[in-house]
Image (tube, rainbow, N blue to C red; front, side, top):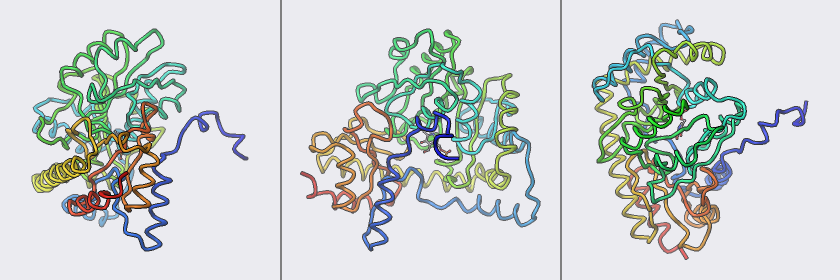
Length: 387
Ligand SMILES: Cc1ncc(COP(=O)(O)O)c(C=O)c1O
């Protein structure tokens, strides 16, 4: 077999551009250069100790078998309790499907809903995998150009204007990657009403839920009963490598997701699920809230630092751990700027190209997933190396 055997979908899928940059950063590190990593989209903290201890206790018994495809009942119930305690929302645990991260959740959600040639609106810039998943299931992703004027989030008006006969659905993320901006609850409510009226699908990715700074923590569950909600243990809970997330699916639709989950995965990771049972305890929550404060301080350090360099972040990020900076006034496109910052300042960042086709040369994503001292150092290294 050679690449001529591959299905056309493979050609249409673009790798993450940042991987090339990362490869170069590693090469430089191997040659002794100190690189400050601000391209990485995962918390730098270790998994909270109570979660690791729960996993160790479970694994030491040696009985690591499959769980039900929908996940452990106890974990689904724990997530429902979390929604109730933290967001004052009642969710039937039967609506919760445990998955292999938000990635597994998005895979199941798109497998369940994308029809061949069905068109899906995806904000551009936005999380790149969404359009590739839609393509993988033979749908057609349509970039919904969003810009700083609307906080890089789609408005109900934009969606109504972009929706036509072939449109099947919409995927949004709040807080968003790469911009950290959020969808205002009233806009999300209006979008949900519109997609429901159209008989369309709405997928809301809440993977950065819990990581919002100075703004009310929110869940789409409070206003979107017909939407599929995506979530994960990766970001707020600091469990990227455990590969665990979940879906909340509309009442009465769980069986469809269960069938797909059985055949795609059999079950999510058993060890990760037993570990995640400790994610909602007061001890873990105290650790996570402390980390959130640290993220908040880092965010200020980064935003103030960028301002001092004359680099504009047009929309103040409300959540996640990213700033989406406008580098156009500096005279280089973002890919060239990312290369320049890496080579000359030893600071790794992600060019906008990874997040879509809407003005990608203009923006650079900087992640504050490294400690405050390193962020301050990155700013100083960049100072004087700008044109
Ligand atoms: C918006 C968004 N959705 C989904 C994912 C996938 O995350 P995971 O599969 O680790 O839960 C990411 C990862 O960065 C993301 O930024």
